[in-house]
Length: 318
Image 1 (cartoon, rainbow, N blue to C red):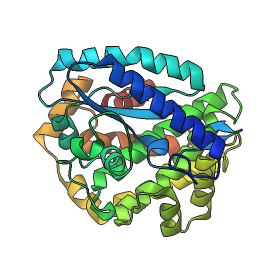
Image 2: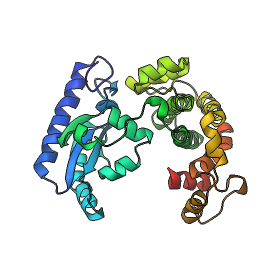
Image 3: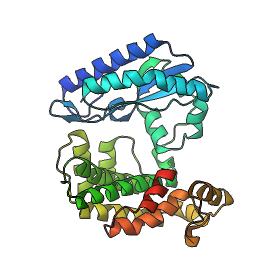
């Protein structure tokens, strides 16, 4: 186990280390105005990257932080300057090398309760510019049990969409490998993670989450995360069952009471403005993520196609 990968693979560790060092040097050499710094997040940033066939198995996810007060034109210029670096290294490494849309420190703090931000500040690798400990100094670091209930709902929404997309591909004659296998396995992982968030028992490392959950299928999915294979850890019916069981538990959790009881004008307005419709009355005024999940549950459980309307709702509020 190295600084970037979760299993014993010195060769892949070396590949990631050398690539990240070279990418950092290229970014520094560009001297991009209003860029504060870049860190490596995701699996390889927190020491949980995967290995497949002696090479990288998942993307390199770089997070880009602009200086406080940078405007829209500044952020767009930073993104444009980093695009050639992304394209060059994607071609060289054979996996996606992604630079997230540049964000100001204010934007990061605004989203500091999101699972994505918390996982970032709890595990990253400095790449270019200012160090993360400085850029993230004002971001509140939550204890795992402090993650909001809505993060469990948001996670299930996205993993449910993955299952619906996988089901559509199976119906179109695509095999179980590749995209379908990945989304089956991610649904199992997402279901387990959502359970832990709802219970207040989330852990920052996947192996610790597997131990805390004590679920054999989830543990298999964690092993797959570190050493991906073409075959899924279960069939899509079992993944749907894991997802719906997790959704039922999440909606029974204590944190769900406030979310399901809170109907606000703001939530209603968000839905109407983005979707140009009031939607179903029974969910009117609820957080849009909750509304999408309520509609998604039956579709996932029954293995129905991903309807255009539901897909549009997911895209709008993802």
